[in-house]
Amino acid sequence: MDKGKIKRLEYRANEFSDYSTFRMIAESQRLAAMFFSYLKETNDIEINELEGKLSDLWVKFSQGFQEVCKKYKIQKFNLVDHKPEDLCELLEKTDLQKDCRKLITEFSKKAMLEIKGHYKYKEEE
Image (tube, rainbow, N blue to C red; front, side):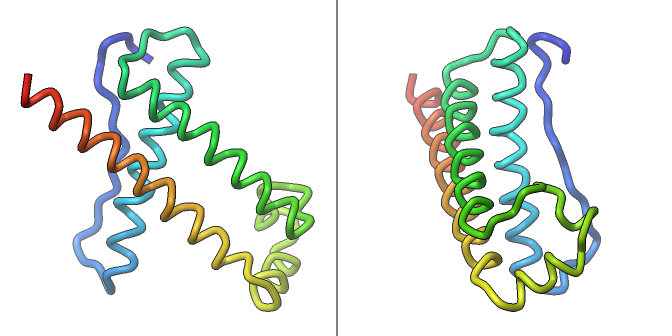
């Protein structure tokens, strides 16, 4: 990563079939901002106050994800690549999807609030 350069992960689509698809793209961008901030911090790249907060959110998000995996006894985080049939069964018989959706929504909102608050504060200076 280049120090001082703004990084952005962008998903593009010409058409959205429904609102939830559109919402997931925005949520994944916020999660990516958290992850990039965490990567910068853990690789000793200078971060600003907002990135520090986003990095902290990534750590908490990761802990939440590990708790979900533990709850459903998921040993490999990329289960879909190793045993897709096991993942399909888990999704059909448990609340795994609901728990993941809740976690993603919660942390996406927290990231959004940090980002909006940061830039609102900057405008007021």
